Length: 281
Image (cartoon, rainbow, N blue to C red; front, side, top):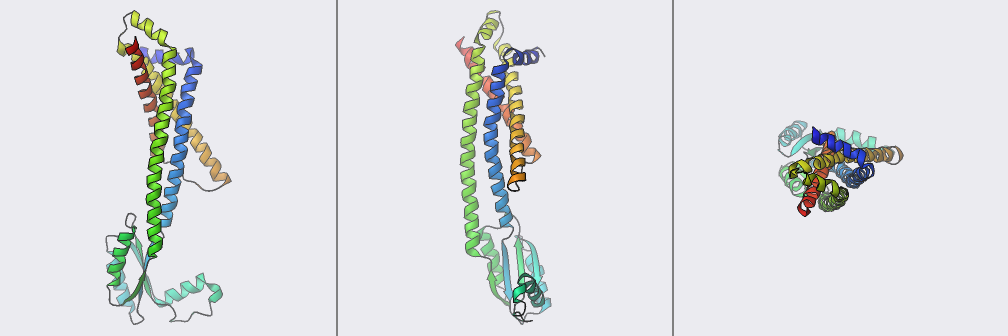
């Protein structure tokens, strides 16, 4: 309790240094949070695009509706498949007329073939899996053609891989820069109170007793910085939503993790800074 009271009093004794530490933590995490927000929205956009990955198996005109329905039930039990829509010739005609109304007179009752429209589960939309499922469906005798946009699926998967690698690399770089800046700021704060530490050492205070108030102070500053960074990131996301485009914000778990990261950065930064100062005395 004494250490906590001492840590809180430090905010009153050195308000400018405390504000500097909180602001540095906040803006460092804010920069990292903005990058994380961009990465999150890129991933969300790619997931929405991936949901459009679909295999269409066109069947011969002689295939009966019963045979087509039985094949659809069998394919739906594939572990990679989430849904199979059985599209008869009548269904295909109705859909074509609805989507291409200006060519309504062109379509005839048997102009379009029946098909199985196969949607895949998340995690099974990479080129290798899509091709494997397409080949299995193509093995049915009554299937004339299977299409799934091979080039498009390959490019989409490559784009997702590149985005993941670049995002991870830049994220680690942002995190490293943030830790360095925050550590330097906390070290300046500790050095400014070197005289206080020396006096406590002279009156017989142990290293643990000296270190604890500084650690608690860094922890509190980290929480405050994390909350401020979260608020700035939310305000930026809200502004973009209202002025430019719809964006996805962090879920509660990720938001809480950001605040915890701020607390840990403040805790570790103050611990190392005070430890280094104690070794010099």
